Image (tube, rainbow, N blue to C red; front, top):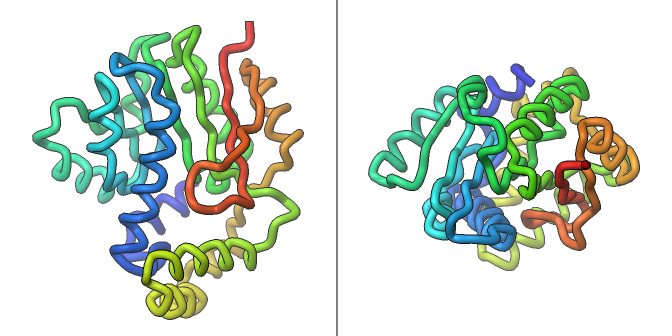
Length: 231
C-alpha cells in the first residue's frame, strides 16, 4: 500500500479537475450519511482521502474521525477542519489508541484495491476491535475480477457528462494514461475480489456480511458490503 500512498500524496491525476474531486467526495458523503443511524453515532472513515464534504457527514453524527495515511493529505484535512469540533483527524497508526468497541459506524471506501490481502486482513482486525457490538462496517467500491478498466472509464465519462465536466474528463484521462499511474498500476496492481471471495474474507475476519444493493460512490459496477460482528 505504501507505493499507492506515496502516489496519492503526490501531484497525481486521479481527479480530472477540482469539480470532479469535490463531486466524488460529495457523492460518497451522501452515501455515508445514509448509513448513519443516529445523531449520537461515532463514525470512522478509514483512509478517507481528501474528504472535502466531511463537514456534512459530521453534522449528522456526534463525532467523525478521519483516518488518513498520506501525511500531506492529512495535513490538509487538519487545516480544513481545524474549527470543526465534530471532526478529528488521525493517522492509521493513531487508531491503536482508540478504545475497543467505541465506533458505531466504520466506512472504508475505495481503499481495498490498494492493499495487499494481508494488509486488508490487518485493517479488518483494527475495524473489528473498534466497532461496537451493534455497529456496522461499510466496505465500499470493491473492484470485481470480471470488470475491466474500460468500465471505470465509462462510469467516469457518464458522471462527467451529467455534471458538466466531460471535456476535462477526456483531457484528464489522457493525462492519466501518460502519467506514472499506469506504470504503478502495472507494477503494483489493484486487488480485485468476487462477491463470494470478499464475503469469505470478511467472515474469516469475524464479520457477518452481505452485499449492499447499491455501491457507495458513482460507479455501479463496483460492490459495497455491509458487515457486523459475527457472534
